Amino acid sequence: MKPAVPIATVGEGAMAACEVDGVRVLVCQVDGAYYALHNQCSHAHQALDGGTLKGHMLRCPLHGGRFDVRTGACLGPPASLPVATFPVEVERGKVHVDVSGLQPRQRPRFGPLN
Image (cartoon, rainbow, N blue to C red; front, top):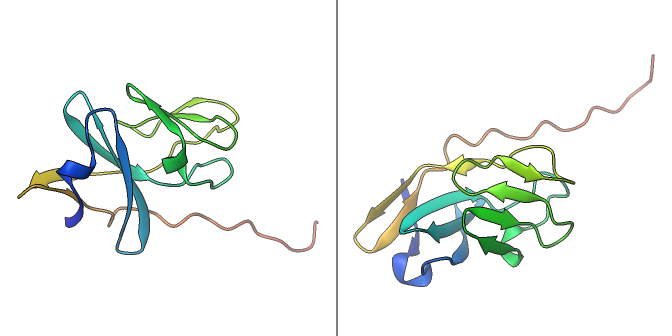
């Protein structure tokens, strides 16, 4: 776990973007609980911190894809894949996040079509 943001910067119903070990992270607070997810839409790779948070639903600012901040599950098109979520702990006035489980995205393979 690495310190990500002070809890004072993430009020109820708010979100804060940060970087942890080179990974773009979005920390959200909903109903008194903190959540952390990859700050990148699974559809067009847009940063999600410019979007809107309503309850547990986060809407991407680019095309409107929706995600559940608790699980990363995709809730609506045009996105069809979930976003990664990360374990969170609150310690000494800061939200700590563990990004070590993030799997690298597979790059598309290009080559001869057989």
